[in-house]
Structures are given as C-alpha cells and as structure tokens.
Length: 349
Image 1 (cartoon, rainbow, N blue to C red):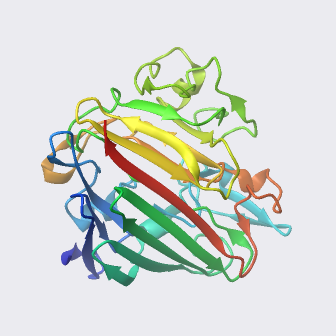
Image 2 (spheres, helix red, strand yellow):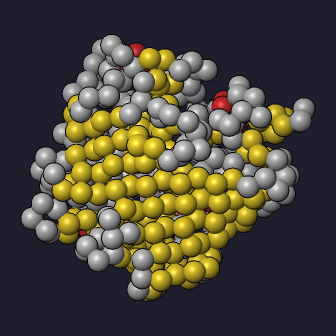
C-alpha cells in the first residue's frame, strides 16, 4: 500500500509504503530518509504491536535529532574531530556532536528525499545520491536500500553503494525498538544476548572509541548469556557514566562479510523475541540514553530508554586507524561496490 505521509518544508511530497508478509507482520517506510516509521509484530496473544519509535508527521522527522528509524550514511557513528584523511588530503566534516562528526553531519542521507525504484507487497527498494563534498567528503555516492519482509518473519535490510572517488561508506539503520510497543516506556526489562567477546571502550564522554578490542569477560558489557538491559546499566563504571548507559560498539564474533548471528532480544511481557544477523564488523548497542522528553506517535510521551538500537556497522572512527586494504575498513575506492546485509528475525517465546 502506498499513501501520502505529508510534505517537507520545501514542499516535496513524502509517501509512505507499507510492506507485509503472510504472518501478519508489516513495515511502513517513508521516502524521506528511507525511514521506517512503523513495524507491526504479532505478540504472544496475536495482537499487533508497533515496536518502532517514531513520529506521525514529516516535520518532526525533519526537525528531530534522534534519527528515529532513518538510514544513516554515508558514514554512521562518530569520527574524531570530524577529520578524515584520504591519499594525504584531510577533509573536515561537520562537527555536530561534541566536536566530532556524528552520522555524517548536517546533510546525511537521513535528511534527504529518496526515490522508490521498485515496490511490491513484501519489498521496497529506494535510491539516493550523496553529492561530491555534500558531507565534506569526496565523490558522488549512489546508495540503494532494500527492505524485505519474508514469511519467516524476517525484516531484511540490504545496502548497496558505489562512489565516483575514494571515500568513506559505512551505512546502518537507526531503528529504535521497544518489543512491548513504542509507547510502553522503558526497555530495561528486555533480555539481551550478544554474540560478542569484545567491545570498543570510549575515551571519554565525547564517545570516540579507543583502538582497542577489549574483552567483555568480567565486565558490565558481557551479554554472552541472557541478561536484562537494565541489570548493570546503573553500575559504578566509567564507561557507562561517560555515555549515560550503553552506547558502545560490540565486535561481532566471526568474519566480516559473512552473515552471522549477533543479538537476541526478548520481552517477557509481549513474548516477542528479535534476532539480529549481520555481515558487518560490529554493531553499536545504544540503550536510548539521550532520547529525552518528546512526543512520539499517537501523542505518546517518549523518555530516555524508551527504545534501544542495534546498528550494524564498521567500528566507529576506524577509517582513522584501520588500514584501507583491511576487510574491516570503511574506505572504498572509486567504483568499488559497497554491500551489506542485516536481518531482524521475529518470533514468539
């Protein structure tokens, strides 16, 4: 189903596309930011719950700073001081977060109109171009994102991009989940398991990670066995204090480029479980520490930790310390194809 969602400040018409499967799941995506605005999942009583935080109008997405449901690119996460050096040339990006660049700055693809190039009942593909130096980075980058719902209750996101010059490409989705429903309050009771032996500590409250893959064993970052998100979130731990909870990249066990399991999240209240599979190096686990007090869909109040994010991506700031020829580097040559896949699979426990 396709319907009008609203208009941008510039008068551009924004459409909403709903895809569905045979099991009752559906997702609604708008062509502003290729943003997921709804994700409906049947709970243990077969009642549909919208588990995606978001807004009811285009203006809120344009003005918002929490990136609800948006595609992030051409680079996700933070870059130290917004500086990127390619072939000896240093590019100064927007410093929009504690002197760092966050999610590509003021002109990320989350704030652009995309074009739907194919659409049917269960899938939609959208395309967008990030122009040369638009984000203060070289090269035009043409990006395609495909959302697909399968009858196995998988919500798949596929990313493809090709640059015209050597540049940075590191895409992700900034969906905020609450498996009890977007209006249900804290996610601290959700049970989380992460297939990760290492995480990337941050240097300080500016949230730039060190170059270390630190063991999770014996720390509050050990989610290798199921644990409530809120169990240790208030612990006396500098890493948590720096960012108000969890906002760290976890290294996915296994080899970059191979789809493999990373996370399982379960809500005892709704009975909904979500598994995440990705081919990326890591995933940023963000416990929604800075959502703040704001109005969401249906005029419901959102607060800190009303939702959590699991954002597959390369290790943040890795273009500044991982060699370009490494499989874990987000640096791509002219005409080199970037491809990544993430799968969010839902079930009832």
